[in-house]
Image (cartoon, rainbow, N blue to C red):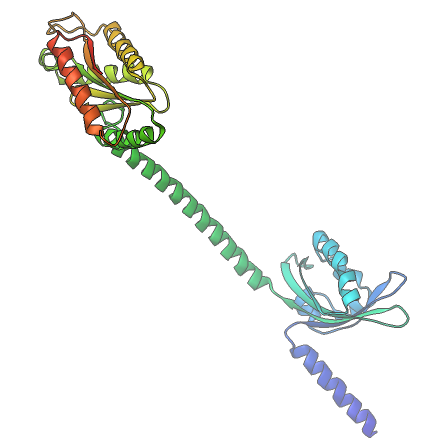
Length: 333
């Protein structure tokens, strides 16, 4: 009688324990012939799976049928590794209950091989649905945040590119501005000095441009400067060449690795191409159309000379071209 009483109390304690644990406690067995069954499953099975424990004990497939097919395949694939190592394993998977709820569960199980080939699994299953939903929310938040960061980074890059263009391009003619010219000619000079290569500079001025503005207006003058700049860009088109608005109606064409003969040819092509635009200029003393005068200079950089010397030579040559009647090129060797 005392033994029966003690046994009853032990079963009562076990029942209370399995009911209070926040999860489903189970003992599951896999037989060598491929069969499987649950030898024990705690009462919380009703809460977690929405089925009676007796149904699971009678047919283990009722639980397997609830698990998402992808997760079933993964579970069966990793189970042999756990059996071999005889260590506790953990697996997260999805189920759909009879009422249609989708839940995320986490299974902690410990396999134990028996001498007859049976594999006993003792473990607990807990509901991790709230955690998974929180993870999904956080994942969505991080993805949205990354997308926003990426969009802002792209916008920032574009803004920086726009600022760079504003800082280096002349707003009217869209060729390099004076600031960009000063930077590039200094870099080109240093590189050419290391390589002992010639650098040529053409300073080009629109003839009688003030008269053009007086006759046709400043808007027409702007159009004229744009046309002249585009002509220069089409002719001085090597990657290293630079066309810049030097100031007002004056332009600078920097030609690295170019000797005096080659620079004069470029200047003459520009002169003819501008004339071919046939922009009427009633205030010119040399032509019915817009023309340009150019001063050309070439130097091989050396320690005894500087960029200022090259610019000075080109400027003097331009002055001579104007004194000789405009619509021409003049070079200083």
